Image (tube, rainbow, N blue to C red; front, side):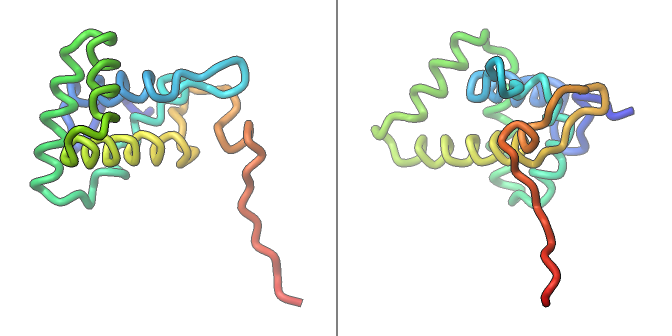
Length: 132
């Protein structure tokens, strides 16, 4: 069984911060599952395993803060990152979005999730076509 918040690189609070941010960015609807429903946060190690140690340290600090803040403040945080006022904040926004969308569209889901995966919903399928 895969523990939803178990990670070699991120603490439990950091994992919760990642899931909170993911839930704000991908809330789901009647068709698509939400970020938290899929449980893809359990595969965060796959996404951060090769991150530069300095960048990982910064990411961990951001996720820790988001793990503590209430959801409405994390939403404001993300809104603030999306503004064009500071280049560094835009880079942070780009990195966080990349992490969250990579996890979601990796099609890796928690074993307890029994719904349709994002790939199934959008009809995405990788096929190998043999040469003729």
